[in-house]
Length: 145
Image (cartoon, rainbow, N blue to C red; front, side, top):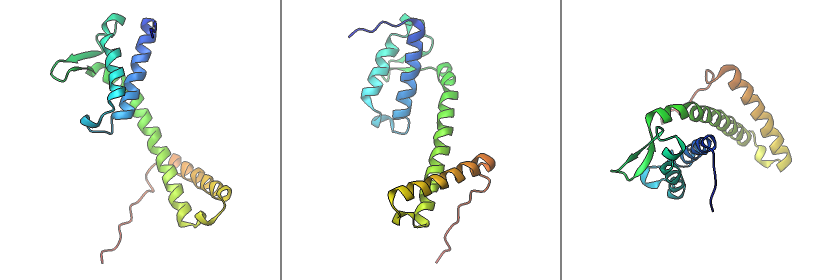
């Protein structure tokens, strides 16, 4: 298969591949990275100079691959940071609501009632975190025995 891209489309595709590979592999150790995803990114990075993006990636002969340079990583950082921020708050809300649902015994309700109760708890946590951020969050340590 052959795909034709303009320089602008190539740059957008490179951005998406970089961000996608980062999302899929960033929480993994280097040796556990997803090689299929990295392989696609490597294929695209190898063509960077042809599309006027050679200044965004560098080839590391020692590691045998293309890597984004510091300038490109800095360009992508706001997107990564926004993603992490959104995921953090979504997960915190979801997990706090699930914890509350278990503590309140919602597990004994019908699925519909449980989902409604969890949704109500999520709404309350969203409002709490929107208003106060983490200021009211505490970790209560158990008393030592």
